[in-house]
Image 1: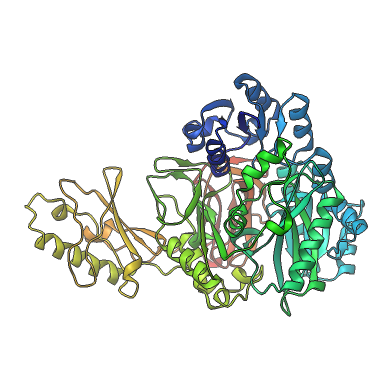
Image 2: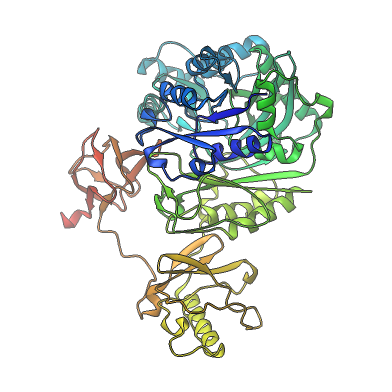
Amino acid sequence: MFKSVLVANRGEIACRVFRTARRMGIRTIAVYSEADARALHVREADEAVLIGPAAARESYLDGAKVLAAAKATGAEAIHPGYGFLSENAEFAEAVTAAGLVWIGPPPAAIRAMGLKDAAKTLMIAAGVPVTPGYLGEDQSEATLTAEAARIGYPVLIKAVAGGGGKGMKRVDKPEDFAAGLASAQREGQSSFGDPRVLIERYITRPRHIEVQVFGDKHGTVVHLYERDCSLQRRHQKVIEEAPAPGMDAATRTAVTDAAIKAARAVNYEGAGTIEFIADASDGLKADRIWFMEMNTRLQVEHPVTEEVTGVDLVEWQFRVAAGEPMPLKQDEITLTGWAMEARLYAEDPANGFLPSIGKLEHFVMPDGIRVDTGVDQGGEVSQFYDPMIAKLIVHAETRQEAAEALAEAASHVQVWPVKTNAAFVMQCLEHPRFVAGDVDTGFIAAEGSDLAAEPLSEMGIEDAAHRLRHFAARSGDSADSPWHSLTGAVGFRANAPTRITQAVVVDGEAHVARMLDDDDHPMTRLIGLSVTRVIAFENGSAFDVSAFARGGSGAGNPASDGSLRAPMPGKIVATPAKAGDTVTKGQPIVVLEAMKMEHALVAPFDGVVGEVGVSVGDQVVDGAVLATVAVPDAR
């Protein structure tokens, strides 16, 4: 076994790999960009090396810099994590050529599965069922348009080198195909350096089922059962679980056998995931599940597999890379209980799920569950990287118990001022369709109106303010007590008192305070603090309620003035509308690329575009006015 490992990644995956390495007595080495100088993964490593500026292409994606860091620190092995260089065959070859241990599959396997069209051709030859579609070399718009018509709408356009939902667009009707194709090609070029696409039949009630596979250097390949990753938004997974609800023994055998075939077809070694799409219109059936793609790396959702099998997949990666045989045989790998994982994203569900960036002044995760994260209080969510900041993971005896535990955990998330999707996750987990196991990849889009978190009402805030003042009076504090100088009030919901955690931010530092129990008994109080702001945390949401105690009203939002402002720094990649165009509410005006995704800024109401002040290629700052829309009679 090697004695040191460099993790060529950042954030929660670097922290996750370090955790296993420390347990095994392996020295840990981090690499970091200038944006991550104070990041958690840098502080947790035994040694850390700066490898470049904030932009990933100049740091984490620069294989030469990573290898130089490994040489300078005496690293014996490199773990690529997921994303960045994890599925880069040339980098894998460079690692082994440098005499280091590559903790990943052989470069030939990465290449074979790296392009979706070539991978599907290979799977057909191996006898693995694949989704009907177009995999041809002719990438002209005319040919792709004709093939989409042949396959039949709706269709899914996918970047051949894509992953993580990037470069993937659903198109429902012919007149929208050209725009969807252009967007998929842009994202493919931007994220993977390859604009080529393939087209698939879009399954109207799709389930995303994937199988964890593992191979060693001695020819053994096993599976560790399946995961269901159907709860997605814009093809980004939100909630994952293992096993898949509604999976019977016959269907499980069919899909795991197909996964083993796929892995053996490329002489696979290490951790990998075979992803399938299932037509769930009549439940899960063995003859309605097709190969989609293979991810030749560890997955973000690997913890749910670890929870139901009792296996540390990172430890297996280390052992297999070191040449050891598979730790367990297939019949020794058991499936126990139910696990669920929710991805906590720094994003604003109330504002079209736009990413939220900034300093984490207050960051408290729920107790009693597994939390994988790469940030902590005082850290920063950067514009340069993926917005996922943590994963909440639970394991229970039954699916219902797991869902309840995860919803409870999400309700206790406290993050400020960066916004998160915690409340949204809780609403998903408690939705009757999810509880019944009636899930597919269209669930969030179909049930969106039921998944929005309820805002804290003005009446609730005022009632809470009264309770706080009542508590302050009863507590016997002096006139200069912090309770008498409160600039806000903490809110609560009477119908869910056990879920309410209150906190205040005092001179930039957060302090938790539970105020009154159901019988109006004081529980905790703050002593000797001058409170300057009060933040209410309710069911995963955060509210700044300071204005209410100052006599103001925070209810409602002012009507939009029609200005479309950049929600974060980024690059303009499209301007679908021009000055003078008549537009309808929700119609894209400007498309911004930031945090590795495209974000459409849309018309806030029916009107006329007054001005588009940016051009394709422009770099814009947070808050910049990009365009304006006016009602017709206001021109």
